Length: 189
Length: 136
Image 1 (cartoon, rainbow over the protein chains, first blue to last red):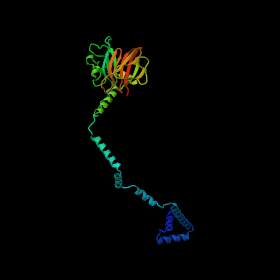
Image 2 (tube, chains in turn brown, cyan):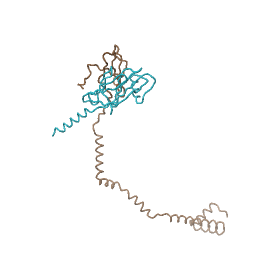
Image 3 (tube, rainbow over the protein chains, first blue to last red):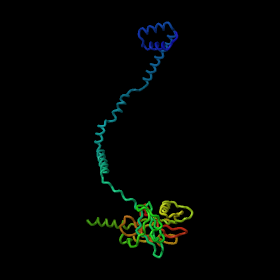
């Protein structure tokens, strides 16, 4: 008799005790008639025994003692939210610090809007003159970074303009020379 | 007894008012020679260029920090001339310095984040520039 997958499946079920009485009788008849099938049956039983023995040995080697206790210890180590809240309020500094933080945040949010400080003024030229005997007049040029350049130029033309470029009124640019009559003296400062 | 704190405050104010002001002073030669900008003068070059004063060379001839006391003139040497700096009296939030470097006389209120560039006369095919910056 040749062993096909159906026969092997039946034989495996026989070894595992999963056949009905009629199926079991049919398999036993075949086993008694076919020595090759008996050999396969013995191999299956041996393999099953070996697998069971191996599984039992591995389980025996594993140290599972106290596993449940360790797991429960981990679980119980983390207190509940209510307990944590209670613990926090038992520490005197924590609620005080929390209240201070809340008050600070409220103060920050409710405070009157602070007027932003004016941009860096940079250098302010109070006065600038040239010696009377020269043909030069000072011109004050302001840069974007607040610097002031005091440059001596020839007397302005008939229109009163100097050679510096005209810029927007709110941009750094030319600051006209300060007339002597408008200059502040040291005593007025 | 109550006048004592007031006197102390007034004394402190007087001391603070009389405390000297430190000013960083540089003498720069700006010219149209071979292109060159000394370290730290690039901002000056850019400011001059935007103001329409285009020089190709900015060389620092000297620099020093002077301590100015109110009403006491302090001289700074430039090639061939002298600049005189005098801290102006008065209660100013920022130092006001009178500068005399012929033929220019000016009074500037200095800031620590900005500089005053004063033309100080011609020098070797260029111009001398006196750079004043209040020290923090």
